[in-house]
Length: 305
Image (cartoon, rainbow, N blue to C red):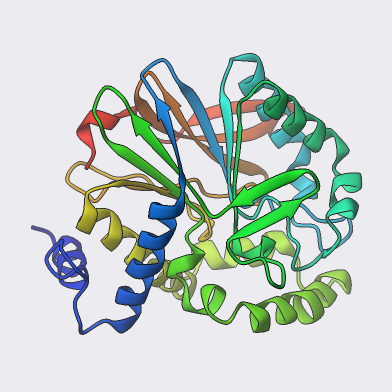
């Protein structure tokens, strides 16, 4: 057993209930269990084709809009998935309502994206999951965005294996975003947005620094630990966003996936489910055309959990 596996086992209380030594892990488990029990269950099989995106952070197309640089890549990817019969799942923080409280402004700024979302919905191939940047006052567990209701979670029941796939944004396991949301929202809306608008902070450099620095990596690992522990403790496939760090399990790891985000410098990531197998992919622009690049080998549902 590796050092990381030992740490996960300790945190999760031996792949059972979380250890009393880690209070926040216990709280995170309780929150994730509540969402799992309350989520809609949808039956899928090996013929189902799903794609999971998260953390687009669509804004008003202004200087603080992290999504606008990758809008073209995302649109092309969505069009291809639609033509190929995929069901589109947005795993939270599709819209940044912390920075832009008006959903109508976001819709207006990214009309082509919402037209594609409407096409998925009208064909019965759309699921949206709530992220922390979409939480509004008095709407913590179910948010209305226009004529769409966005719940906290989704459970996919795989017919061939009987396994459950739990789709949740993941902020439920993050103390800063999950518990003190009102404070976080004010900081983002007033401080961070104005720093971006003034050109003092640039989204791409900010994200690159977070992903490539040691402190950034340490922070992301800390955010992920309760999520990985939950997947290992309950042996359930878990698909999250929130951290912006794409991830997939290696053989023997807890079945934790992270879709990554749509705000990386020059590319986006997504998680596909085709023929009962998961695959993490990257989309980047080459001469104005979106190019799909696999980031992992296909991982069968039957091999997970």
